Image 1 (cartoon, one colour):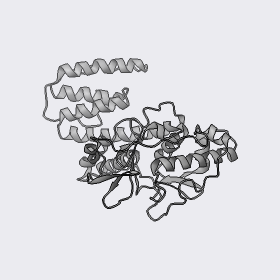
Image 2: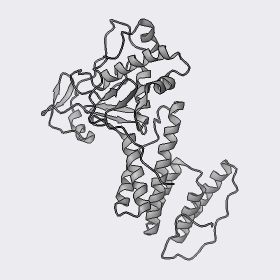
Image 3: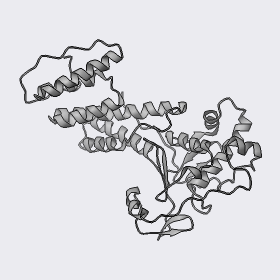
Image 4: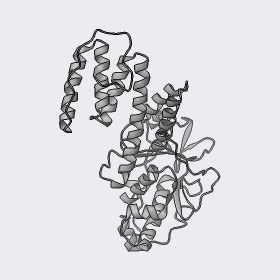
Length: 336
């Protein structure tokens, strides 16, 4: 089946729908309590300044090191828009202007959950869907008010300076993150992986570089630090399947070119996603035998037998040893 990149909303020409909190009614005490926010009059949490020694880490986030500290954190000499980087592959992290946003800045776990849901989407999320995910079964009138409060909180965290462009946008019915101001590792991996697999299947010359790029972007499953978020499971499986497709394409490429070590490396990484992939187990054993690495092949066969026993599948016997040949077997493998 051919993979197609989902359509995304064009937001470059959209202006901010409202300043932080503009569409938010004054929340009552009950709403603030439901969202875990501080009561009126309580001290707000300020994000930390740019600590000494942090400047050296700025290039790692793709920012110009020629920056200066200001009242709202980092600001470039040219007054470039504030930028946000969101990482959700592995542990969830938000980097604002080169500085990690601490948990205390969110005031509410639901606010973080809202941002996580938006990160998982490849298109704007309707408000009613967000309400159902965050407060299933709650009266829409009540959950709509709660959502407005959370939107205000997320805006303040992502861009506390009201005069600056807002990364979080809404048109009254849907909510999304402005791709011009926010970089998201999930979106980058998704688009890179899909284009890499398509390039491989089309036999394009840039396929290998794209595949290695995609494999490098996958730094862990989606929201590994929040494994009990039921709503996230679809995204977890989707991104994991894309990662596996990239790895299988790399195995095919390396096997065709006789690179045994790379076949082993990508196959072992494939097992991290799916330790019960029988086809991959059998292929690796056959490749190792063909390359004359008999000891490794026997160890891999023992691992394969144990994995199959765990899922109640009868394992195949260790294949007969063959003299080393010049070419590795084809992928996908024939039966041993």
